Length: 260
Image (cartoon, rainbow, N blue to C red; front, top):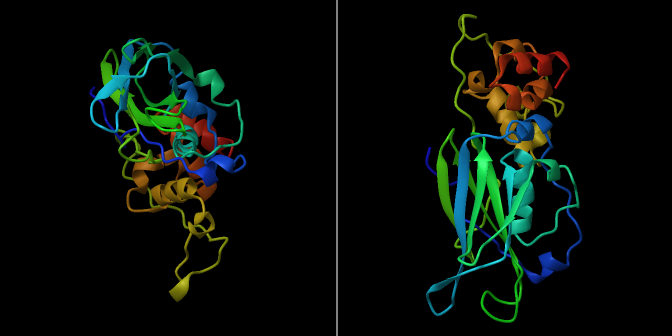
């Protein structure tokens, strides 16, 4: 499977952001989203980290740190914070699932033995008085590795656009023998009725883009893609929390049984 970009690599650091204190990560950490990418496989991801000179041309960025994380709501949010020049709160939850390397003399890097999964890649530019400028930062991109496939990508400094914590829904699960989809269970909104008396179940998540999107997935027109039959009688938060397990019906049913 070839490379599927969400956005090119990015960093938009600023002096105010650089001086700000650590920021909390707004997305929840779901262990299952990372465990599925932690085993070994037959895929590989390779690339180059290149510096674009102000006067034109490029040069390889050698001996730069590169990290590979399983792509999740949480890792995307951390990458977006770093790529924007901000400082997310120190945390070690991604460390057990990260793969690390350094670029070689040609700016190249490679991660082998990857299982089929989506990954977030970050490369660090330390900055300096010449070349890319005084302030350094992180270039970030997202790519998908297929089973037994090699993926190639390029990270540029400075980047053309910022990395955004975009979320891509997975493919819809194949229909099973359970019959036609059941109608969704109506749920009261903690925020009360909206204008015109129509409930707004996602109103409590208006300030959290990740949870707001998850809520829209399980309550909107495509809800049957994200809620398996075992979860169609569950509460709203349970349906949201069990989205990462929907590709495994048994694991999804266990998630619903324990309430998320």
